[in-house]
Image 1 (cartoon, protein in one colour):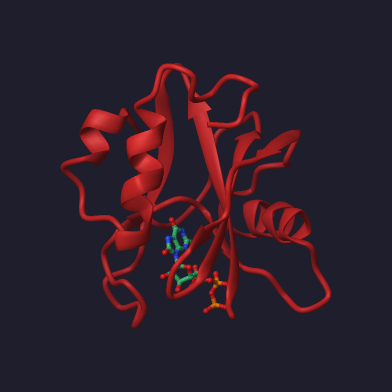
Image 2 (cartoon, protein in one colour):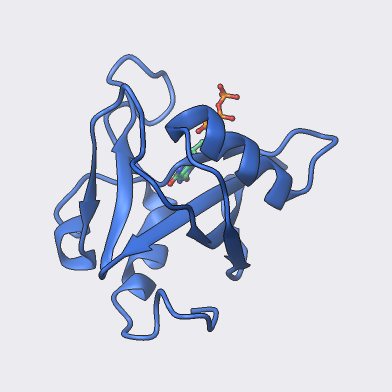
Length: 127
Ligand SMILES: Nc1nc2c([nH]c(=O)n2[C@@H]2O[C@H](COP(=O)(O)OP(=O)(O)OP(=O)(O)O)[C@@H](O)[C@H]2O)c(=O)[nH]1
């Protein structure tokens, strides 16, 4: 089973998404949370730290694990604090859950986005 770590970075009720390249054979053009596959020697949290630096140049300061999502791949979402301006060559932005509902996203992200609309999201409690 492929394990994938995802960073949900929230600032003032909006969440960071980037758009996968149209040339990417996997999920081309979809808006996704930063993250990627967990390598065999890593924990999901270690993969998250590595992917955040690689993909958007941000240092992970704090992470709260959310419930794992089982699907074609196993997603490990984390609520993440990572200050600074993300740097990426991909299109990116900060979106409210309502705005995300109108973006093309990976099917597995739908339930995650739904939960981000909960007023508790972004606080210390797992959503
Ligand atoms: N990064 C990311 N991957 C997601 C999200 N939602 C989701 O289902 N996935 C799935 O998780 C997998 C992550 O793949 P990836 O291509 O981003 O991983 P990676 O950076 O390690 O890529 P690579 O090793 O293929 O270069 C894909 O199969 C993708 O379909 C999401 O929000 N962000």
